[in-house]
Structure formats: structure tokens, C-alpha cells
Length: 486
Image (cartoon, rainbow, N blue to C red; front, side, top):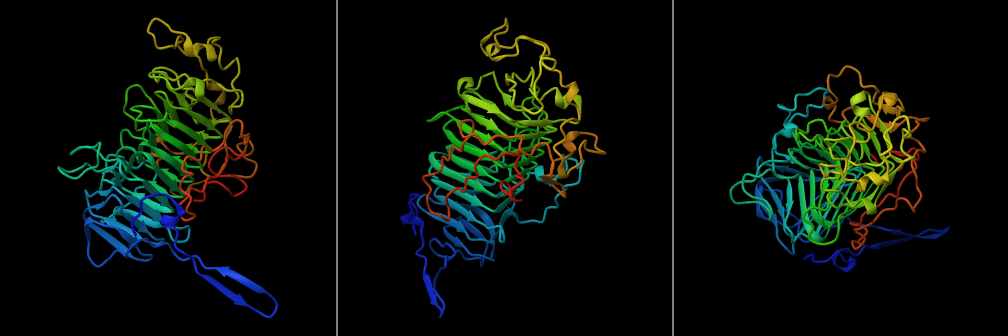
């Protein structure tokens, strides 16, 4: 079946109605068949070249050469599919890519060889296979109209492209992103999935409509790179994601190289743990969530723990200050160096404005510099960077205060040399204990934060985004059971 639009008519498989009756009552049970598009993909031999159709539940497929999903074609993975990719290879998507795992039958896409995860605290990143770039990931050309991934593991990406096979916008020898999407009119939906290990960004959305909901990100980037990095022409939501040990930012918005609409991103109810410490950039940028270079949006109800920087609103080049709102963000730090960067200071070029709803609450004692107000954004000093103070913020009164009380992640973190030593979930449980001060610390006021729901043109019930609205508890796990399901 060719697949060209997002309409229900092009995607929906007619469900049979099984009608049963009994002596007491009549009932109708709707039997929903597993989605299948086109012919079944054979698992008899390693795949190479052009592929399309459906990978079937319970089967394991081997990618033995670079593969392409051509424009007008669709590759669909039913629940419970394993795809093993040989070293250095690429899945190039010019058409449509769909991985529909389920909670009971997740999909897995990763290396052909068995790589051992070094999730213990303090694992050496220099020898960690998570940063080896085993394969180049899933690269979407600008012709890709839909990338849809649910309940799927994607692991060990970030290899370098070979001499002849790479997507538009990349080149031979360049490091790959885990997933690249670059169609300003297309949709990328990523839900309830797990992403482990990359050399650069796990997701780079150069342009497109997106929804990233309830995912888990571990070990994103070696000496640089983000979990989710979206650029100009990208619009959507990043919510209820758990991000552990990202090299730089975990979630980032930038209007750089905009091909169309202004980059507009809502980041809400995410949890960020120990991010930003493998970044070697001397400006010290990044650590949790970041807006820069003309991006706008809203950031609320996020939980930021032991990250290099808190919410960073960049001033060089500056974000769209007039159309960026934030508040109710919860920060915790084991050390003074972390707490002093709840509001990042130079040389990060951050101009994040303290909000009275932040946790901990900003006070005059903590911010003695009278210039620390909205007016400073437009004040220029001799250097022209709009910042004119040495140290506007003193976090000493917040060290090891406001512990969010995770179910199983002790704070302060015991027996570690560096915060970068924590880079994976492992056996930790980042749900909130009953009585956690993060419970109820957020806002659900729709006038402050509401989903953009930018992928609403995808209406097929199998494929559409399941958007979780903002929750009252800070972070990705909600005490009522909603939010991240991992």
C-alpha cells in the first residue's frame, strides 16, 4: 500500500465486527487487528537496498547493508519486532517510518553485535560502548512525511557516514544523529520510548511538527550533543521525558537556519538528572533545558536535579524574550557549584529571569543585584552582551535543600567523584515518594501552559500523538499515575 498523506483513509485497516449474543443481553465486541501496510517483509536473509511493507510481530530482522525506504513507501514495525543493524550502517527514510511497539511488546532497534551496557556509576566514557557510534541511526530526508515511534528501544547510534550513503544535509565522515528529521511540513511523533547512547544528538529536528512524550533518554552525547535538539521551522511539545546524563542540554530549542515558521517549543513536566557535564565547550553552555537564537515557547513544571545549568535563556544570539514564558520549575543541587547555576551566569550568556513561582523561591538576599530584573535584558554594557554584573546570584542557602525525595535515588548522591558519573537509569527509580515537596508544586493553568499539539494532522488512531496535558507535580512522574510510564 502506498502511503502519501496522514488521512485516515490512507492508513486505516477496516476492523471486523464480531457480534455475539447471549440469552441475557446482546453485546458487540470490536476486534482491532494489528496494523499492516503493504506486504510482509521477509526475515529470511539480511536486508539491504530498498525496503517497504510490514515487519511482523515476533520476528527478528537483520540489516546487512544500508537500506532505504523510498518516497511514497512505508516501513511499519508491528509490536514485538527486533531489528539488528550491522556496524556502520544507516536506515535512510525518504518515505514513512513507523515503529508501533506496545507496553507489553516493545520494539528494539540496535546493534547486530552484543554490546555490554556499562550502567554502573562512574563508568569511563572513553571506553563506554554507548559513545562508540556503532551505527548511524535513522536518517530522514526532507521528503519523509512521517516518522512515528512508540514503545521502542533505539540504542548505540552516532556512527560516521561512509563515502556515498547519507541523507540530505550530511556528508561523508560526518557524525550521525540518532534520528534526523527535516521536513517542515512533516510530522515526527515519539512516545513512550527509550534512547540509549549516542555520540551527538539523539534527535535532531531541523524542521517539522513534533511531539516528544513520556520517553527516557540516557547517555546522550559523548563530549557534546543533546537529547532533543530542534531548530528553525520546528513546532511542538517535549513533555514527561526522563533525561539522565546528557552531555550538554537534554532538551533544546533554537530558531537557527529557520526555513519557515519560528521555532516554538513547549517543555513541561520533564525530569533532568545530572546533565551537562560531558560538554567540553569552553563557554560552559547547557545542562538541562535551553532556549536560544530566536526560539519561543513555554517551560513549566520541570524538575532539574544536579545539572550543570538550570533553565538557560540564551542572549548571544538571544531567544525571543517577548514570546517566552516559564515558571514553576524545581531545582535541586548537591553542591554550591550546581546551586550557583540554577540561573546560569556568564560565560554562558544566559539571561534567565527568576520567577516567584520557582522552587526554591528567589529572594532579595539571593539576588542582591538590583539589575536582576526584566529591564536588564535590554541594557547594554560596553561589551554589548547585555549583561553587567560579576555574580548576581548566590545559591549557598540552597545547597542540599528541597530534596525532591525520589523513590530510589539518594540525594546527595553518595560515593561519587563527579556528577557526570551518573549517566543511566540503572536500578534507580525517579518517581516521587508520597510527601515529596515536588508533588503539587507545578501548575495546570491553561493560561500559563497548554500543549501545542502540533501533530494534530495525524488523525489515524494507530498513529496519532497521545498528548498528556501539564500535570500538577513537577517532573515526568505524576503521583496520580499519569506521565512517564517507564
